[in-house]
Image (tube, rainbow, N blue to C red; front, side, top):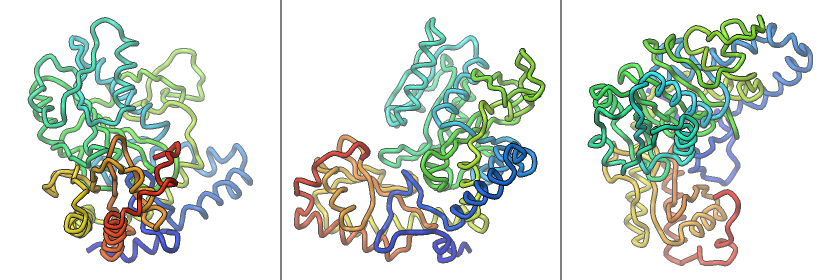
Amino acid sequence: MTDFAATRAMFDLPEGVIYLDGNSLGPLPRGVAARVAQTITGEWGEMLITGWNRAGWMDLPARVGDRIGRLIGAQPGTVTMGDTLSIKVYQALASALELRPDRRVILSDTGNFPSDLYMAEGLCRTLGGDYRLKTVAPEAVEAAIDPSLAVLMLTEVDYRTGRKHDMARLIAKAHEAGALVVWDLAHSAGAIPVDVTGADADFAVGCSYKYLNSGPGGPAFIYVAPRLADRVRPALSGWLGHEAPFAFDLDYRPAPGVERMRVGTPAILQLAALDAALDVWEDVDMTDLRARSLELQEIFLTRVEATCPDLTLASPREAEARGSQISLRHPQGYAIIQALIHDGVIGDFRAPDILRFGFTPLYLSPDDVTHAAEKLSAIMQARLWDRPEFHARAKVT
């Protein structure tokens, strides 16, 4: 059994704060600061440019990729790190489209993260012709899969509501129709059990700064199924995706396997932070994590629904149909979240009316969740959110 008291001790959490926003930015694991300091002073400071070889910087994207691969059910050597999630979405989508040259339709859902949709729209404009992005309601995705489809592009867990797609079922349906599938695991990796190999996923991408706790702007990852990895041609054919980067050939030759999905120079300080953050996961069983997450969600939801009739559940009622978050609706959701933050409970707001709460068992206890629900109840019952300072919108919500 996973010892969640032990994982909690591996995080630096501010005194007096209950943090329910790890689904947006994970907190600081204790080992990260020392590892980054060592990378700065002991590697960059002492080794200078020789750190690429002596400290193993060049191999860090693959090594860290394998550590994340274990959490998403990927085989060794099928995940690499670098760039941002939007870049990785673009790479995966462009490669998938090229593998289906006789088709022009990308299917996604209206609950997908807007940046993924923007990337798809931009790629369609670049390709020209009759390439197009089609979006339907999340519940209508399966019915919309047909033989005209080139690529199904979905985020497994809806960033707003926490609604979870049935990955294996949708992959099977898309493959039956002759389409490929790109999965965004931003709200899945480190939150729920994922098995990209067992589900026969084609491509998967994700960020590392949410449930994986790499810090603001941490690097993204990309997975390519082994059966496709030597066939895809990267649309963003950067020098570190070249077969021999330091040959400095003028013509691009892709590296073998997923390494061809590397683009530019890796962000070593951020990768070092992520590598240290992943130490927390060494003794974590994802089945245990899922069970504890659902337990925490139930504690919170039961208390809130009993005491806050003005809040409406935006997440699926069925626990197994959602990821590791609970979302609630209220017309004054922004102000309510600000009042909660003022009272030491950090969640976040998503327009137009959603209060989001992430449940991360690595550092949250049942007592934390109970206290958070009690504070939300107090704020709602006394309308403590209705103060001018709580209505003033900040740049980041």
